[in-house]
Amino acid sequence: MPTDVQATIPHRPPFLFLDRVDELRTDGAVCSRTFRAEESFYAGHYPGNPITPGVLLCESVFQAGAVYLTKKLQAEGGSAEGRTPVLCRIEEAKFKGMVFPGDTVSIEVKHAETLQQFHFMTGTVRRDGKAVLTIRFALALVEKTA
Image 1 (cartoon, rainbow, N blue to C red):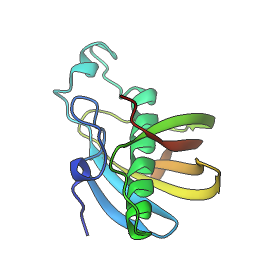
Image 2: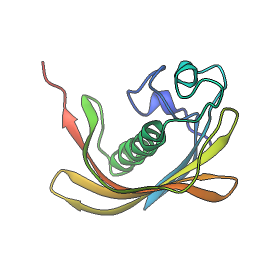
Image 3: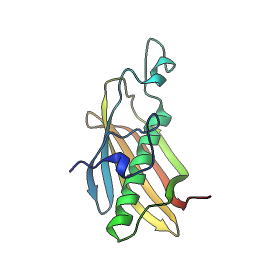
Image 4: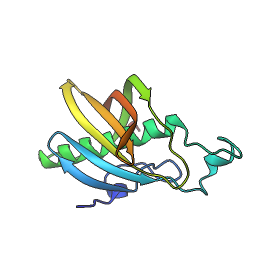
């Protein structure tokens, strides 16, 4: 059941790191992304030995979390209109492998708990079924300011 990412979250290229939403569950979501060799960050990270920056793998997890929160809010009869997903916390980011140009990764997020407006989640990025990143984080959906 693929979902249009750009219809769900406000991120746009060149800072959109999800290609599709593959699965939505009550407790999380699974998305995917293929990192393309022509993406500009590979020119500097690293010339002759391109590796996907870990911070961009983290960002793909945060964006998957934003997809999950938006869809959860909509399922509960609410709307994310006028709200921006904002990262509030990063904990225990563990890099267990590398992602290279041409690799497709699966990005899974799971909701752990909500305290007030903060949504605590875990995320895992997998390449070929093996975890390359695990992370805990929190997002909030904040109202747009003027």
